[in-house]
Length: 193
Length: 335
Image 1 (cartoon, each protein chain N blue to C red):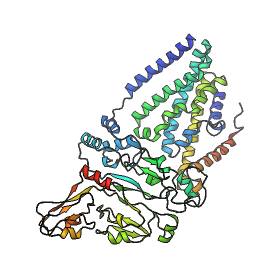
Image 2 (image 1 turned 45 degrees about the vertical axis):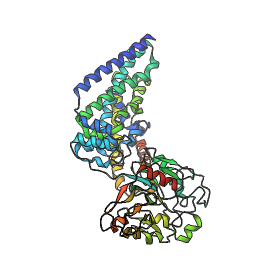
Image 3 (image 1 turned 45 degrees about the horizontal axis):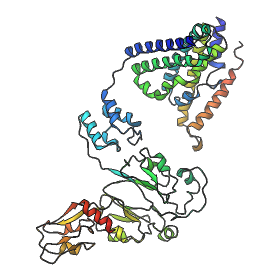
């Protein structure tokens, strides 16, 4: 039990997917202009990542490994992730058209979000068991959502500040992301696994 | 081998089944008209309407937030079709095209330095205002060509871009992109244009360019409608007042002014003419001939369609008529 809680904390803070592993940078910069859309994106990614890590683990352990077709790993994982993304897309379109509009192309692009595939692959590589995989996926997604929302909050304040012209837009966003990543380095050593 | 096929196919079928059920459960009714209207719009997603792409405008039209007229690129037929779908009248729009107000011949304007940077006018313009000796001249690196979503711009032999008026839909992308701001959108019915943008004094213009506006004011003096004025050292045409007579064009010593479309109308004198000679005396290009007290005749090949004779005639005998194809051909041959 204690180990599982530590695993989540490690995935959220210490080995944060965006700020420590630098995975999923595209949506991190793309949908972090407004806190609301960032929260929506975060929720969508939490759903997709948790369920896809569950199902990819099942698929690997009970289909790929017994038949010795591990080389199909990437294709199968992407297939499962894509199916979940489609599901989320339908659900969001039904439940919140405004959020659907705001997320735009980044919603289907969760499919190719390397953080989602990253979780699935790391689960297999570090030989997590079933619950470890699910919780690791959940923790990683929460970490992604946390970084996204934090960053969106900072960017909203940046909108109002006087930024030198050459640094406006993506330039200052990248600098901010770097400083945020530095700040997250402070969590190193918090969890000993 | 077989396992892999079966596993992948099975997973694919399973997720397809799940998604199929989900799409029933989360079905959203969308307005059919949005799709249809989006199909009728040009689909270039140029953004000139102010909405995010053609789909954005289609959405806005259906929800009542956007007007069909916002799209300058849609053809007349499609505009009417959209209006019919929405049950409203489509307003007639004035067709406009982009015109580049710079027209130096090949090698006509020299370079003050050799530019070897990125092939983009905007980048070149950052380096001391571009390599051309005339700071208002077209840089000619084709930024307008690369931003045009309708392939209406080609690079001409003289190194200047050429706009195809048939393809141009006045989306305004090139107007925005041009760092020299020498492109603007003009109504197609006002194609007598000043093809120069230089706000330098005449002497300076003459040094660097043979076809630049030298602010001689001759056009301003000759214009019967007060439609052309030299402001800030450049002749400007007021499209509201201009009647496309082209008198300024004949007068211009540097050939800066051009008619980009050819003359559209000619005067015709009807039966009720009593030969008062008022029109013949007023005609600025002497195309009206005839003896007093007899019906006068207009030479359609030389008539410029300014309409001064129409204003002069006391008996409403003179009218402006569309040029016939034969006359247009003869005039072109004469030039």
